Figure 1 (cartoon, rainbow, N blue to C red):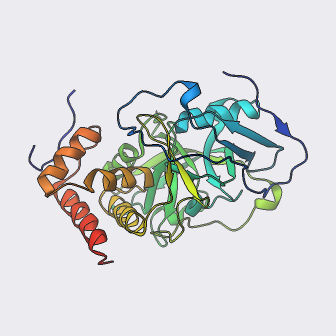
Figure 2 (figure 1 turned 30 degrees about the horizontal axis):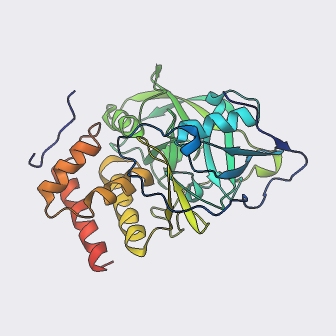
Figure 3 (figure 1 turned 90 degrees about the vertical axis):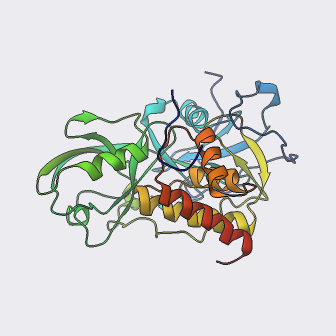
Length: 329
């Protein structure tokens, strides 16, 4: 298929809690695991006895005992395991950060978890409703989602329309736009909805902010920098969580992969108003062995049929992958 906008046509047992471990904990203990050679694209989850035998430690970000979780192959299963460990409902979980209890978008859990990473789960806190006057075409928001149905604010551009509304903060889950519930809507669709709101008119957002412990209350953050220099994961390997197919244990990203994913994530924000390292990593993986942009476009259509990418974006992503291969940035 040539380039052009396209779309594809159509509980288990309660986990053990370790009492009286303080927030800010350490690393999860993990045994030696061989690298998986399974290609997870489009495959159903493997049976439980074939899943990676990895154990991770987790806490609720506002404070809790430490829980141990294992046996998950995607983000939704991970959230279900965390909810089970703390005896809460999965919809109460907004997002997770790695190795920090703070709302730090540079440490957001995406599609990969280092084998020694400590997971902090942020749950729903205060609900709020705000009215915003759209005085400019761009609101100054970057949207992401948790992979389990919740879109939230990852970055607020300084001096933007939204930056002037001080009750809106990085980490806030967008629950409704003008009274329409958007739970379950992917982040790229939420970004499109916000972009298409008419200029010089007011609109309403219903938001849910993450619960904060008293000591976590601090001045409002602008969120992540446009691109983070942090490596994905801190362990000797990473657990790659896929939206389709089983999780796989992989080596740490190579320098090529890190640079390419970083650049593609920047392009996603520039063209679509979203940041999504899992999506960026998938695109880099798809384009690694493709010989030309048309071949790359066809592979994207096959792998990411739910997205509709403009021609310029596909060319720029193809160029970014090529630059990374050649070490040009």
